[in-house]
Length: 274
Image 1: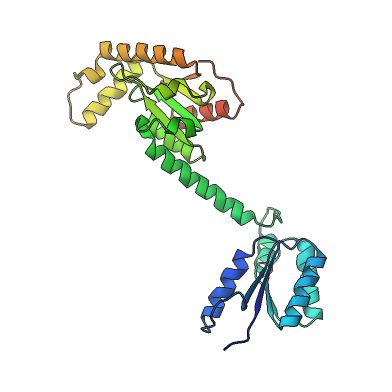
Image 2: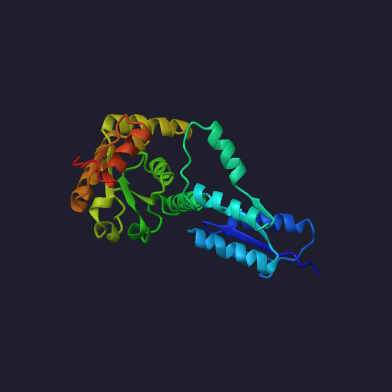
């Protein structure tokens, strides 16, 4: 049985150092255990470093460290050499090279990679939310959503939901049709997180005719009929009036332009009144 001990010392949680250590140990068929791998996270002071050194000497351990703060990294390197403790600086060498070649100064913030991971997972969660609650499939999403988009068919509700999801917002969109009563929950949510998407009849007619052509259908269908469009837009105004939420005109606008207006509103930078 191996008597190798490895201390993972970090000013964050120590996952990076542990992954590297495990990968190396696996090459020697050394079984992982709490006795072999000892994690010492959240090192914040020279006293913490001294504790690591003492522990390493008492257990005759190797120290694998991921210290971002320059002062602490310098201190632990000096102490490890002075006390003749075998060690590996996982991040220091690459950090030094990057700092020499990059025009940007490093943040020197422990745990920053985990904040980036958190952002990634928030984005994935928001994208899944947008898919699940697309076209008002489940009214329970209204209470969970950060943003609720409301509009008639072909007002870019779905692409806007996906675009905003990539900004980590949970977005639900609700289609309006005169024949279908909106869920009662729509009139109970905070109107400040709701945004109505209005469009002029000419633009909507053009978009719907193009959609019918893509589907191989005649543009004489009621979907693109002027009277039908007017009826839907009047119903939209009626519902939005009851909700009392802001409205954005999406006529002739790119998705990005509309999305930026929505973000300006929900982040409090712009008061949209319609």
